[in-house]
Image 1 (cartoon, one colour):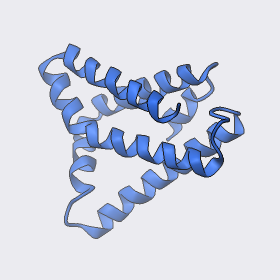
Image 2 (image 1 turned 60 degrees about the vertical axis):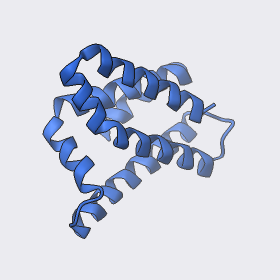
Image 3 (image 1 turned 90 degrees about the horizontal axis):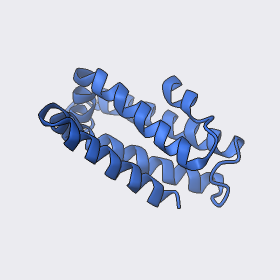
Length: 127
């Protein structure tokens, strides 16, 4: 969460999106085992782990939406709309983790293409 908070003070909304996607997925690529565990356990058999992941995701969503609101970003949205948009983006991002890690191992170009597609999807959600 600290990593993402640091990139949200970019100059434009497009810069915030690009910097956030880059920072998040660079971190994910550098902590592959942790994020494979998170991706797997979001639907795993341990209710306590699923709950912990949901709580962390909820905190990320709330912090990002509040930061956007306080910084005057995405002003066309109310705070609840920002929370809904960020929740959709985080959920989409989490679902891409296994593919991103597989593709990045196979071909950095394919991994980068997936990130570009994700960034476009984020822009679409926030437009």
